[in-house]
Length: 279
Image (cartoon, rainbow, N blue to C red; front, side):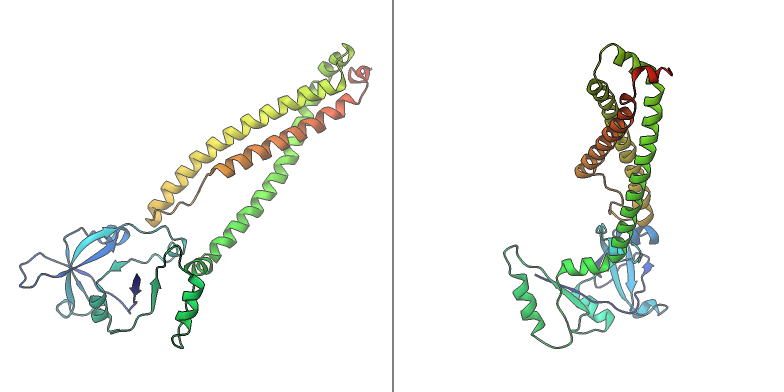
């Protein structure tokens, strides 16, 4: 299956009042963003022309036959283009391209040898080049890769800073319980038992805090997606909260909590019990 796509200088779409025509105009499909911006509905009559500002009588009358949903393509977000799908011969006639196309896509089966197809297409003629759709997606998404790496760097800095902050909080909280720890030690409770109880407590607090963070992140993702999908009129998800992300967040929080509790508790249990009472 081959899909042809041609581009031309401009398309003029002028809404026309409904009237009886001797020849029924052909139909086109427009994207939902175009329909919302121009106030178009299925059944509206338009006139297409290759040059803006031309006489409407010189264009080709068409009828909006369908309104399609935009694809979730990150490369289309920043451009803000409106899309219209025409019949191939209709597009050739309006654009004046004739039998030429700017680009076309070839869909292969799952068992197809894509590498062999690329070699055969590239050997046909000089002046064009065949690429995998995956390679094109990577090239057009480099901006998003840069943003992703920037966010990853911010995440690493945040984790390091939060780890230091968590350690300081745990040291202060455990230091406030020095008399309790001293009393436990004088009662014969071993150092390992005291450290274990503090670490378990820190781990539980870390897990509960991470679950609260997951709920806040889920609510934030819903808000971000709802806002920006409405702004850009696209089904693309700008914020995604997946199972691996949740597992990583909870695991990291648990590890940091246990490490902070271990460091804070070990600092006190090494001191003699009477020294913890200030004697």
